[in-house]
Image 1: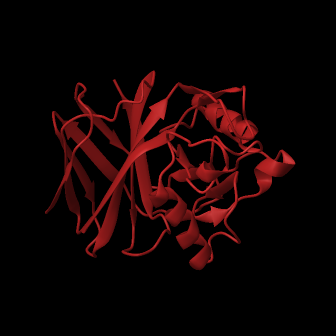
Image 2 (image 1 turned 90 degrees about the vertical axis):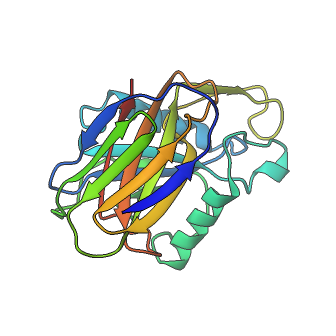
Image 3 (image 1 turned 30 degrees about the vertical axis):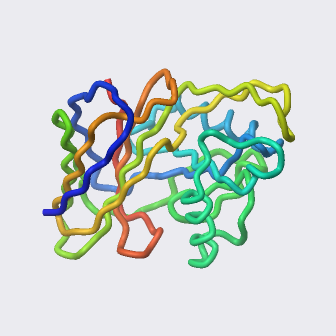
Length: 231
């Protein structure tokens, strides 16, 4: 059993249970920035997945806002150096060809289909088994039946966020975001992981969601994932 504490802003904690199917859940990662004029169409496309029947069943979208645009006129309030570093690590591991925005990673592989208007297809035929999670008051318990050390990742996702951009390439625009990664934590262990929350991050989102996934230590190759809305 492994434990980690997550200290966030005050908010009500919800009860929730969610799990994956036995087949691999598709994770869509968008690397984006409010300072990038090419990013709003990608953000809009990601938001459209709110209406996808696969959402939080076999599909989990996430938007990682990077900070390397911040010095070019507009500091993105959702950006994190950690998310920029995550993208750079994917380049080093051969998942991404280079660091750029907007950039998509689907099932731990670079995906350029969005630029050509291609539909998102769940391409993985892996059957890793069921990943389950339960949230009870302040405790999130993650379970997966594998007898090896794995890293559990947890993100809090903000839905219905908007920003009035006052400088930079998107000056004068109102940008709308969904699936924004507001907080991320990870912990290594076997079969059973526990995360303790004090509250959810508050960026004035209309709705909050949570996603969990597993990798081997030091790797960005997703083994299995699950998620859901916090009611």
